[in-house]
Every structure is written in structure tokens, then in C-alpha cells.
Image (tube, one colour):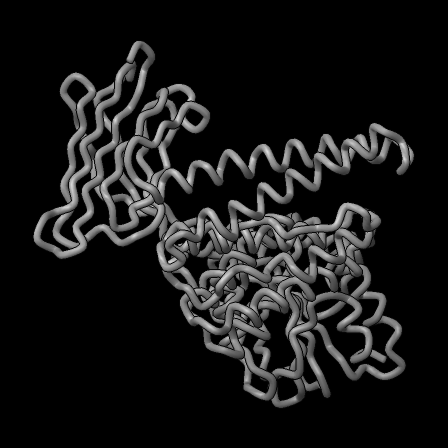
Length: 451
């Protein structure tokens, strides 16, 4: 062959008599090192570094060590080759600089199906978009519209024939289950855009088997879960309605995933991570309260620390429990003990003068505080500042004449640790016995208690 290529030899033993061997030859590669990994629960799990002489790479698994699933070979330039181990020998050839489009599967029926699906899925999306644009441009009875409609039906027939028939030759194989799970829904293009979206929301998850935890050795659950969430992401809606939409999507996904504990745990962590990226803390709080806490889920240890703190706080602080004692000094240097505050209720408020969200919330809290007909709620405000002057200036400037305390240790103080504070502002409403009434998530949650 005249063009650069890669040979991958993967020998998988069904009987356990022989080891699984990978023999990789890469031409036109600038370095003699590659990394072999596999996918598991959304993570890329490192297996070994492979070194070559003249770009020849070799690796042998221990007997029966190659679990069927999606494997990944990383090469130079942050590029990788995905391939499936599915109880058969694998020989692939591809251009190192154009891996997917030039992929030639020499041996391995599973990988032929896998790469046929990747290419077919790509073309299906591109051509469907083009044909739908044509249908929007012309009247229904126009010859261009009729032609586009016929082409679209033919394209759908080809796509779903491959998904449901061709790739299912061995329905129990890993690749057959994978392709069946990640397929796109068959949407009727004659429906309005609104109805198409509604149809996808109802049927997007129809073909994925949430009880098949072998699919955790791939990107199947990641692909379906995150794309399903995007169906509910409507930029035209106000945030409060978007929160409700996302909660509805999370409920659908997580209740389907409950059939398998491993899948349930993975998708829960996946959603928490995604909504964290999107900045929807309200949805994360909902998932933590109604799924993580309720079902006592043990999530991925690589979960961001702020999310883990959020989960730990929810598990530790239950309504009716006595909250941890706080003893800190006020601006005059006097030691103030939370347990000594004599009030029907006390709002424990953690904040920092530099925190933008605190700067928005605290004036609203102060407004509720000042409008009380009777002083039934006192505010015990714990500052996470490290600068005494910043703290005192903030209090004086805003006339916050509630109980102000701080140890000026920022996020490293004992009270922060005891209350597992993962973000500011944070609020805890307690009764006279310092037993937790509620952890308000925003000003609206707090209003009813002042009223």
C-alpha cells in the first residue's frame, strides 16, 4: 500500500487456551509510543503503553482479559482509533491522518458493522438535514419537494434496514447490542418541528437496553443520555421552566436506568456532571435529593469535589436533626455561640463579600429580615472572607445588622467543614433547639418561612 496505514491485530480467545494479542503496525507516525485503553462507565481506562521499533506495536492480554467492548488506541497528536473486541480476530487498516473515513476492516465482522454504522449514521444526519431544508423551501406538491421526500424515505429505509436487520445477524454480539442501543429514532418528517421534538422525547430511549451493563464498556449510555437531555434544552424558555423540563428529562432517564444498579449509578453521575457544566444547580439538587440520597447511590469517585460535597451535605443534614455547633467571633472580637441564640428560628447564612451570588441574594434576605412584624427569625451570618477589612466594609456598606461572625479562614474553617459547604451562599433554617427545618435553595424557598 502506498498511503500511510495502520494494521491492528487483535486475537481474542473464546476458549481461554490462547492469549489475546494486539499487533499494530503504523506507518508515517512521528513517535514510537502509543497507549492502549478501554472504555468503562464513561472513563477511558488505561491498559498499557506500547513502544515500537519502526512503528511496530505489539501487546498481549492475559487469558480472557479482553472484555467485549469498545477499545481505544491513542497515537500521536491526540488522535485515537476506536475498535471493538467481540470474540473474534480483528485486522484493520487505515490512514493515520484520516482514521475513520479511510478505515478498511480486513477482518472482524463486528468492526465492519461498527464502522459501517459510524459512516451511515454520519451520512444519514447530513443528508437528512439537506433534504429537510429542501422540503421547507418548496411547496408539498413541488417536484423538488416530492423528490426530496422520496429520497428521504429511501434514506430512512436504508438506515433502519441496516440497524434492525443487517447489523443484527448475531443479535447477542456486543456490536449488535451497541448499534441497536445508539440508533436514532425514526421520526416522521411530515410532522411539524414541534411534533417531531415531542416524538423524539417520547421515543428516543425506546431501543436502548438499560439492563445491559456490558454497554458500560462503550459510549452508548453517554451518547443516549446526553442527547436525550438536549431535546429539552429550549433557549426560548425562562430558566424556571427549563429547570422543570430538565427535571422531567432526568426523571425519565433515571427511572428507566433503575433496572440495573451499575447503569443507574453511572447515568446519575453523568447527569450531575452535565447539569454542573450547564450551570443548573437546581436540577443537581433535585437529582441528589430524590435519587442519590433516597436510593443511597455510590457514585464515581472522580466526581468533582463540589458535587461530592453537595451529596455529603444532603446525606448529613436531614430535617429534624440538630445541626453542628458553631462558635465564632463577631466584629468586636466577642465569641458568639450558635446554641446561645435565643430565637424561635435562626437562619444560618454562609456567604463571602466577593461572591457575586451572595451580593444578589443578601439584600433580598435582609429585606425579609427587616420586614418581620415580630423578630421570629434571627440571622446568624458566617462570612467566608479572609480579609477583615473586606468583611467589615461589606457589612457596614450594606447595613447588615444581623449577627455577623467569621474566623477569616475562608473555605478552610471548621464551620465550613462541619456544614460541608460546597458553594456560597448557603442557608440552613433551624428552630429554637437548633434542629434543621429546611435548607432553602433560593429566596423563594425562604419567603414562606418569613411570612
